[in-house]
View 1 (tube, helix red, strand yellow):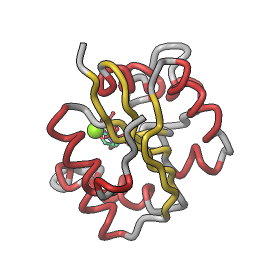
View 2: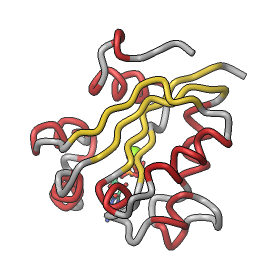
View 3: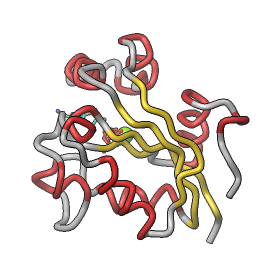
Length: 141
Ligand code: RTP
Ligand code: MG
């Protein structure tokens, strides 16, 4: 299986709950390495640009309002099958539908405040990583 990189965001709700470390532990236990990381409080323009694919959706304003409601932790994860593996660790978008033991089942409160973001395909992973990190800020490990 290919070594991939994926963009992960610990959203404002999970940062506020002080569970960054618990979420990082899950990445590490699954064999994913943090190869870049920074904390940021996104501007409205940054959040709108990041979620531009959803801009016509009815939930877009709520999504952006939520993403700028507090600081987030942004990281690049690297490992075998990293994109799908991270999505598996995250669980379903709606925490009520997320499998037991997933990050969203354990830490998320609602479909809006759902703890984490993860890229959904190789093409989006590449775009999302470049959105937040220069190549010199991502470290081969
Ligand atoms: P994410 O992009 O944040 O990793 O989440 P995802 O792939 O699981 O879900 P996506 O379809 O990309 O939606 C992005 C975020 O928009 C919010 N959402 N709300 N009310 C709704 O029907 C609805 N659908 C999506 C969620 O917060 C989701 O994480
Ligand atoms: Mg998505």
